[in-house]
Structure formats: structure tokens, C-alpha cells
Length: 282
Ligand SMILES: C[S@@+](CC[C@H](N)C(=O)[O-])C[C@H]1O[C@@H](n2cnc3c(N)ncnc32)[C@H](O)[C@@H]1O
Image 1 (cartoon, protein in one colour):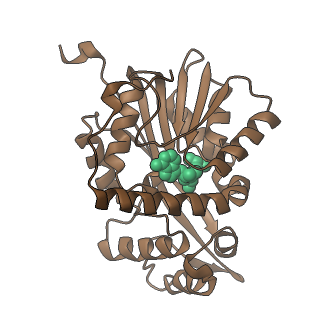
Image 2: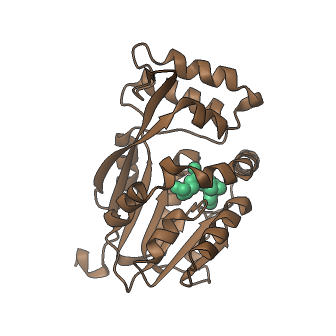
């Protein structure tokens, strides 16, 4: 599984793009190095119900092998491990993988493996896995189509490709306000995209239209702020941006006051497509 095929290699990038990509990678490592412990503890992101939603959508079988890219603290891999032959997680941030290794140890998982790596250049041969998933990472990607094509490359013909992420509102003003807040909250965020843009990505990757499972990630303002490392450590502005979105729901997250706090939800989707079998086009 570990030999990268030549088809995984990409043409050299211009220097400006390399610089930009390196700066962004540094931002990812900085953010997720700092977020790792608190992120791993988030009940809202790792409770059984929300993880099962993705695992069930992928329809795993006991004989399957699964790769979860940008696996973070490993909760998705750990859930798959109980239902498949082998589950592998890959992430670019070592601190996140340390959380994943601890989780696997706590649960005594013998059929998992972890890789430090980049989802733009997966260190696996073509057609290595039956299911390839990615949860809550596409909004951190500058080149989401390249990542989706890599996921497709390492997936077996007939296998499933699952992308789960938050989605921005169709209303461009709401989407822009949401992304302004998120880029302040976590400067490694590139963009939450509307569902239509994510669906277009599947078309561009020559994948069949995915099945869509919408869901919400309920969030409480102060808990979110506590686990965040905003630009300039400016939590006051983050709080203000969320408060200001209440009137008129200007970020499309349904922010509202509930007693002494503010609650809102991240609209999210699970998209499941399948890689065609060689004989499908015959
Ligand atoms: C918001 S976390 C999501 C973690 C996990 N998928 C989950 O749902 O719990 C985003 C993760 O994407 C990882 N990441 C970002 N860019 C990546 C890349 N190019 N290759 C691999 N991992 C990446 C980060 O290190 C981080 O762990």
C-alpha cells in the first residue's frame, strides 16, 4: 500500500505557488498543533451519532480497507476500525496524529495505522483502498480538486469516496460574512464553499453525482472561542462577529441568544460518490 505510483506525481509548481503553499502549510501546522488537544475533546465533533452518520453513509463491509485523509485526532478511523478489515489515517500535523495514536491505544485497536503526510500527494499506490474519506478538512484546502482527485486515485474501482464538510450559504453576502469570521477564528481556513461548488468539484473530478446527507453541528459561542486561536489572539473581535450576525442571520448559521449565551450551527454535508469500475463504461 505504501508505494506511490508515478501517476501520483504532479508537474512542478511555479515559485510563487510554492511559497504560498508553504506559508499555508505553516499556518495549518501552527493552528492544528495548538488546537489538537482541545479539538480531540470536542463532543460536538466526535460523539457517536455524528461519527456514525459518516461511517453509515460510507456503507462499510468487514472485508473493506479504509483511508481517512486529514484524519486529525482519529475519531473517524477508530469508528471504522470496528467495522472494516483495516482503517488508515493520514494527516499533515503530528500533534493531531499523537491524539489519534492515544485514542487507538485507549480503544485497543489492532487494525489501524497512521501516516504523517500530505493529502495532495498521498503516499499510496493507485487503487489501494475500498473507501476513502475526508471530514471537515476541505475548507482548509487551497486546491480541493487536486485533493479529491488524489482520493479518487487511491480508491479501488467500485469503491466509495466520501467528503464531509461545512457548507456556506448560497447567499454570497452570508457566505462572505461566515468566511470572514472563520478566517479570523482560524487563519488556516481557506473557504467554506456552498454545496453547489462542492458538487461541481465531483463533476470536475469525473465522479458520479454524490448522494447527499445534510446535518448540523450545533455550537455554543464561548466553547468555540475557548478552543480557537484567532488572528492576533483577538477573541473579542471573534465574539463581536458572532454577536453581530444574530440580527438578520447575516452568516447563515442561525445564531441566536439562549439565556446568557449564543448558539448557532454549522450546516454540513456528507457527500458519497463511487469510483467507476473499469467495465462500467464498456
Ligand atoms: C478541522 S481538522 C479535521 C480533523 C478530522 N478529519 C475530524 O473530522 O475530526 C482538519 C485537519 O486537516 C489536516 N490537514 C489540513 N491540510 C492537510 C493536508 N494538505 N494534508 C493532510 N492533512 C491536512 C489538519 O492537520 C487537521 O488535522
